[in-house]
Length: 64
Image (cartoon, rainbow, N blue to C red; front, side):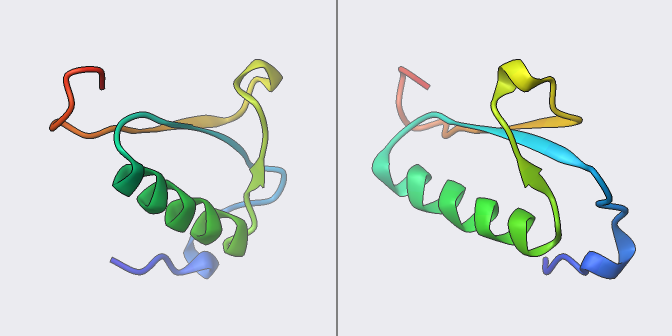
């Protein structure tokens, strides 16, 4: 589902991203990161106390 940046309040909104799983999952994570940046979110590290943390994982690999 496309994200409409006009419906999300992104002023000073920060988000951290954790990607777990296989290389295909990394591509999905990069796509999501691009969308978040396009919508105006600032990407930060987990230790920078973001407003939200997105954890992208898969259910196919035991390590995930």
